[in-house]
Image 1 (cartoon, rainbow, N blue to C red):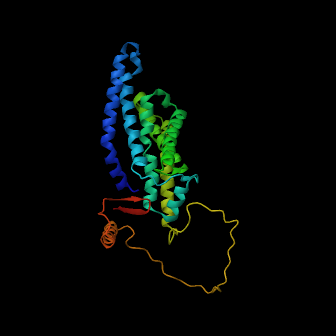
Image 2: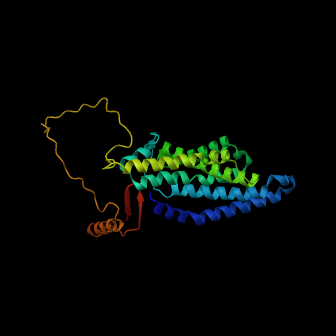
Length: 288
């Protein structure tokens, strides 16, 4: 799923999310008005109702992108290999794989901003960490139960990290507003995680491009136990060194070529008309 596909999915769920937010806000304000005598004026009831409606809308969009936009074809698939997404991105050095990692982090940044605005409890790091973890755990569990996605430790890590990044950004702005200034120590503390991620990304990019041929994409995402496997060979191999050319498919990222091939198959096999297209990892999909 590339950024174009993400934007398309966002546009699908944006309007319903606004409707849900308005309904939730109206319902909350009605309840506040009915209980007005019992509500502490300093509790920020209307503010909580507004932030709460934004949280509901935001979470609906996240569920829509990660679950509702997929078919039920992933039943029982669980990937407990932590950082396997990084290994896959490194082995193939796929832009889409790196985009997916970045998106999974950025997707939960709003949560790290909205939760402290909703409740002062989330001004503490431990609560934002717990809140982000529980929110992404619920999504991953929903995916594996409904078969609309894969339960992945990588996603839990990335989403939780995104919540923490949002919290760091919120606390940085909150400190500046409250104190009208910020110390170098506080600035370093709030920007430490983004700086570490930036340095890591630049380092990986620089190291990869310093290699003559990059990485061979045949490398697996995670290891397999080969302890009980026996390999044998009856072919006499030549010990003489030989050089062979390396080829690249020039159509691998050509969307129009892929569409022409899909239309050719549609006509040759008398399939229904094309209804949609998108990407899932390295694969471009055309649906009939």
